Image (cartoon, rainbow, N blue to C red; front, side):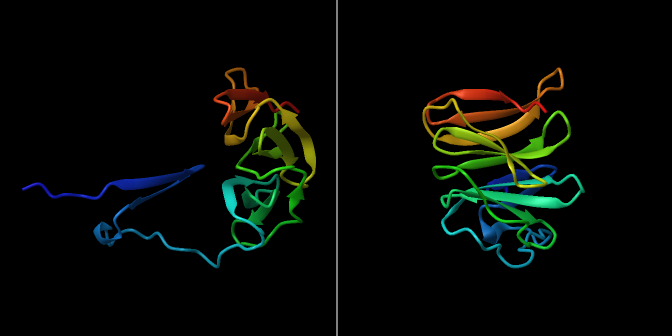
Length: 169
């Protein structure tokens, strides 16, 4: 007789992948997925996006954004907010990504109802944007490199397009 197992749900974050059962009753006793610390509070409306990365000094961070039109940076180890909320989006923010420019500067890329912004992860200063291109909301962001080493941000939106943006220095 074959044993029936529950489907798995996976969440990938950088080099960390959390895998767990969709059916808690079927979960293995070997799983050690549990909350660490208290919830991070500060957003005034729903959170739509989170990403993880590192500042230039090696500090691991969480970047969050949402319907309050702000991007926030949190220390991943302590849960404390790092600096003030980053403001400048005109609409709700639907996604964020973290990466590096060609000069090594760590950056946050955030997208809202059509505009893309780039922020310095160390200082919180906006270093670019808002860049128009999408005609409707940006719901997907990723950061990578082209084969020639050029760092890029990739965005996808409700306008059914995918755009590639240079993250030069």
